Image 1: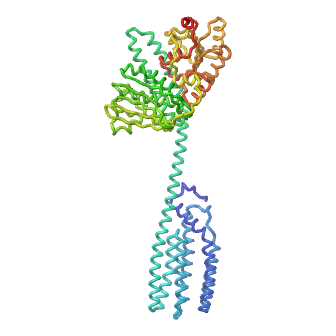
Image 2: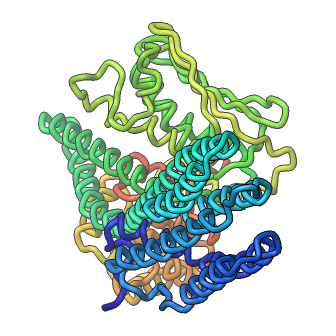
Image 3: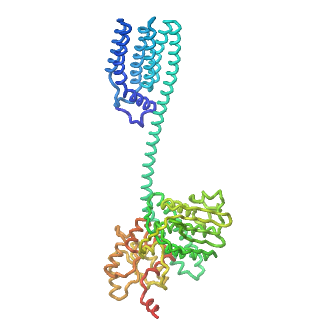
Length: 599
């Protein structure tokens, strides 16, 4: 029968097994030292009391220790259930040794030999004290050894009689009581320590299992997010495009109001999906920051472009002040933090407005987002960073969002090591302050693609491009884009493969009708990469042709890869206004636009 795994054996058996192992580490030392000790003491006693009984006692004691050393030895391979039997064997050996020691007083305590008796008492007391330390793992063995030797000594002293012997007997009795009390205490402490050790090991094992399970769940979550980020965005992207086209076509008609409400619902759904995926990506560890020199002004200008119209619709003032500062942060995640803070400030401000300002403070930069909104009561200031919690919105008004924007801010704050403070006065407003490192020696200017992606570009062109080529393997997306861009006066050529795109570009070049913009889906059929395909088409047919990627994958690694290639990208589901803006920004001006711009 083999040993049970430690986690399968009962706790009491595991404790007993360790007690046996601890004692057997010194088992040989104990009995070998007893053999040497009995020879030395026997020789001293024989010099003072030359009798045959001393020789017999010394020889018998020596043989008992020698035989004890020859008994079969416990090993780690012994089954856990056999521990109790081995504990009984060890206890029997120790009690026999105690009985053997208890014979000594009846031999060496003699009338008229008080010094010899005193030496014997000192030796036996010291021997019992040492035994308490050695055999404390076994309570019964300890009690048996100490009682067998010390009670025999006390009885021999009383039997001898006389004032001195009675006093020594009383002294030995007190010593016996103290030994037993100390021995019991140490035995209990050792058992408790071993029990606590195994309980901690069991907790650590369970914790390790939970960590492994959490890691597996995190991997599954990451795989789900990878699929969801594309598969959920793709149909929503098509709905958004068809809806925007329908809204444009019904503009000015009675049905247009319904189309407008439809697009509001679609856009709200897109924002909710994006927000939930953001939280999941951060919690799953998918989002990893890349800290570098980041200029603040392009980010602030982009935020002004994004939220300026929203503030105007709500009759609020939005003041975003340029600073000329550079910080050490992530160019993708820092705008996300600020965007959520500004969006939150505008939602809870009904009069006045929002001010965003950055200023240097020593080696740090403070970015303040201050509003004149409803403020936050003191008892709710910790809860505002919880998911789905919103101040003053018990009815879950969806116009105020999901209530996860500040939760994302807190996660990004920890991820980027940018501490955030909050100060608020109810009915007067709230201040959120982000503290981040000042970059005193900023790197060179960001690439155009990086600026376009992360901060936008305020230098927009008037009008839209005349001819655009779209490469997307989804037929619904091609149809929706064709209808939508048609309402903007753009002639769109939509193709589903690289070979079709090559033919379209070749025909356009031959007819002298070059495209003003190439739009590619990031993930094409057969695992093709839209960025690679788009760059290949530009290299072959038109090196100056602007390229825009539309992607349902917004993981930081993908974004950084695209940024390194110098390509602008917009994420699915695409809002029509955002798509129109970025097309007007990056597309090549048509011949008509160039002619109109000439003085």
